[in-house]
Image (tube, rainbow, N blue to C red; front, side):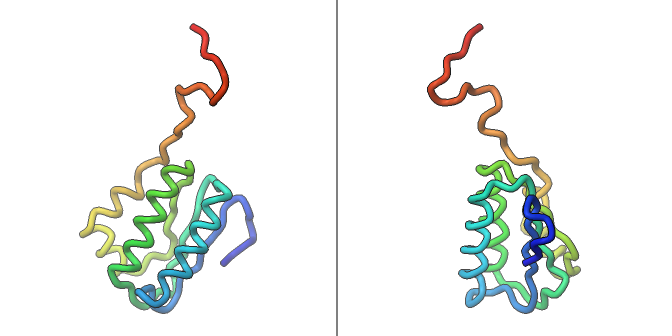
Length: 114
């Protein structure tokens, strides 16, 4: 993990992203998203292989990022991963801006006036 900018954590994913390695990565992602960064970056520069479990980690991160108001950015995406993301429609998900749950809604305990 690159900690050069704590406001924008970078998760470096290398080797194989598969069933055996997905659990610890998902736990780290959940920990990072709990801090509600504006952006979370995946760096896939050293990724060699990814199975469906790895794809589910990316989708999980997007879904949780939507709820936290965190944009998910992918860097150094290898061609094989780019193809998988395009074929599964995940690229379209990642292009969506995070939902701001607070927009248009008063904070809990506050009163709205017209």
